Length: 178
Image (cartoon, rainbow, N blue to C red; front, side):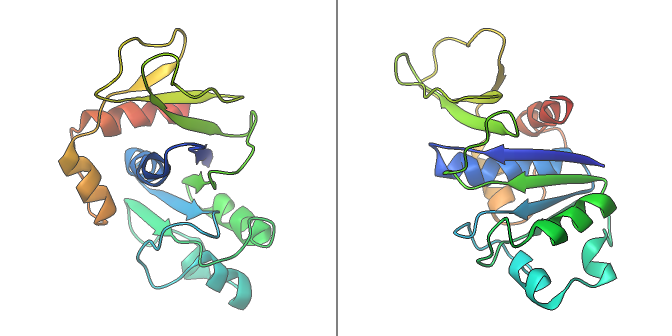
């Protein structure tokens, strides 16, 4: 079991699409949204449902290969801790999507847009930069993701799989080695 905690302190779109892409890159994986104010991902259940009613065995384990998403539904990470721990034990890969206001330090990877200096935000802890059409130079000793294709972003937001050879998804797979 591998767990990857991601957050984007300054880019809400990257904070939604990045975890979806990392989940897709992992093959069979579950994205768990820990942000009570997070987006309304599709699906019949939410993390709040599992916390309030208790999860069933089929809700705790993968029922098919590929990525799956569990939206938040308004529950705090602290209240969901026990359910999240059970999910992490039963899924081969789990992406934890954390709120933009989360102070991760070394506990997660920040996704930050790469902007012209001096506008690139700085954060504490591990960081992966998302290249933009405004990017000029690559920061030393840091991972930099290529600009994603529009079709890739649209597919992820629609809950479908992007092209199997998508270079942005392939670049996101490197996060699992961090």
